[in-house]
Amino acid sequence: MIAILDYGSGNLRSAERAFSTSGIEVVVTSDEHIAIEAQGLVVPGVGAFAACMQGLNAINGAEIIRKRVAAERPTLGICIGMQILFALGDEHSEGQPHRGVGIWPGTVSKISAEILPHMGWNTVDAPDASLLFSGISQESFYFVHSYAAKTPQGQMQTWTNYGERFLSAVEDGYVSATQFHPEKSGNAGLALIKNWTSTL
Image (tube, rainbow, N blue to C red; front, top):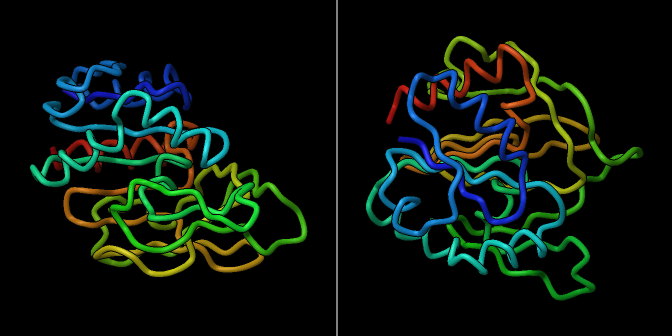
């Protein structure tokens, strides 16, 4: 079973439909036990870093993620759900960065680009050994964001350029994340979802 974590942020229904194409049962839940024990956990996210962390903490979500990491259970963050896996985020921080879950060190910061948000389709530069991008490394994916992580983290990094280079995906053992929305990325996004679910 795949659990999509409901903490008040994210395209829950579109994510549910997209992950259901894998053939694995999908539930949308805020139940801590279900989220910890599921074969795979998806952490979606739309909006601002601090608001997402507030919603996540309200359901003990940060601890859910940490427990899954400790138990070596696969977890996938999407968009802000990727950003909150980092230690800090400076969106609307007024000089004092907001604390994230802290799975990876580093700060999520504003992209240096003339036009923000970065909205629309863009390509990725994935490593040859990537499991997420197996067979789809030449495809484009759908982004909507103004902030991103910019320093290498995890075992494998995928990069995208928009004004500057930023992390568009991380693969780190049992924890993976994408800055783009696979559930909005057409056939390429569905293929990435199947690549991830095939590892569960």
